[in-house]
Image (tube, rainbow, N blue to C red):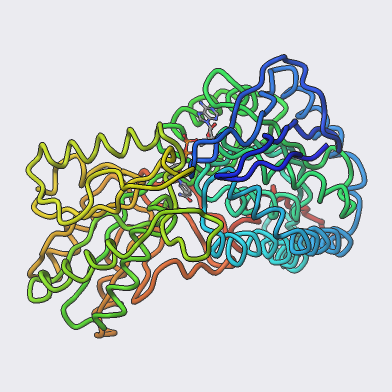
Length: 501
Ligand code: NAD
């Protein structure tokens, strides 16, 4: 049974019932525990979710292991790609349903969810199906050594059972970013969505069945992290590799657990992303792009900018312009297309963000705008709303400038030289993403090549090609996914060496 019921932010009538998806079916949990999932726009309970017990996780991993030897491993790359294209088509057909579930879980805005995130999730199945189809074949290598002549045929094989541990900020996009390449490479999967956002990955189970993905290939277990479903899954000896997206601290805990079994691991972790704005930039474009990079999804994208460095001649003008953008954002019904600010994921996360507001004040920040909770009307007055907030005047070693806040916030610092801006940008434990705004092409290339992050955007933000490499420097991650880089994580390479006489 897929998630059922008709809960909607602000008009809750009945919470959905979300069950785990194991061996091609929505199943009764072996444990008796459930938990509530709330829509952060109005704090209404939108789902009652089965928390997968150790026995449920065991069942899911066993079903994934059994499916490894079945038709999913035996069909041709063409047939597998055709099934994954069908998955994509079915998601597109049911986009409104997926968007509705995602909005119930997250309070995301209808426009970017229905027109952006859900279709992008579908697209990943097409793109990775085609990449695997074309990228599995590897060139033979002829060898002539004192030991004899041979031809080496490197070939890719599925890695096995993949555990995919997913975050809440872009639930569908980030789970399909793992699910699509894992399946395209012939693996089987157990997915654990964030406890905050169980619905879309669970709903996808029905699509997998309808598209013809064999039972056991795709499984979903819901629950929490440490001491719960997430830990049971990552520690399970039947799992061959773990792909994780989430906080750096959690990534460290999972890596420690995986080490004893030598499980392969791919980590996409936190960030504290800098933006550098030079005085010769296209000012309006830089302001609009920077506003998007700070406030999109209420600042809850790992790629959002939280540290801005603005060349001194345009510093005051830039601060004033960004303040105007922040103050134009309006919270409200996420399903109303005129709403432009979504809520934080939960009241608990709002407490964390508010603690940074306090820390910034205590460290002597000038609050340019925001710094509190906005007024919202009617059913939305109980939601996890927060004011878009801009600070200036903090030292670079203050907590708010060093740590990831994960909200619609930024600190703006002036700089005088290119070297100074680069030094500021690189003075971080993290290295996920950066933006550089300048009209001088030589400068942007020069600066970009000195920035220690996995992606540097020049005069833009969030233009993400699925075929390009993605991952972080330093504490922002280990490994790269995206395009053929995903093939390297989701396959093992075997070298078949054929002796020639
Ligand atoms: P989180 O680390 O709290 O949780 C992520 C997932 O891990 C959840 O499913 C959670 O239940 C699970 N988990 C927690 N503890 C676990 C444990 N001990 N064992 C197994 N599983 C465990 O992260 P979040 O709050 O959901 O997401 C926000 C964070 O994710 C931010 O730091 C953000 O920067 C980061 N993020 C990074 C990227 C990227 O691509 N680098 C993308 C999105 C989000």
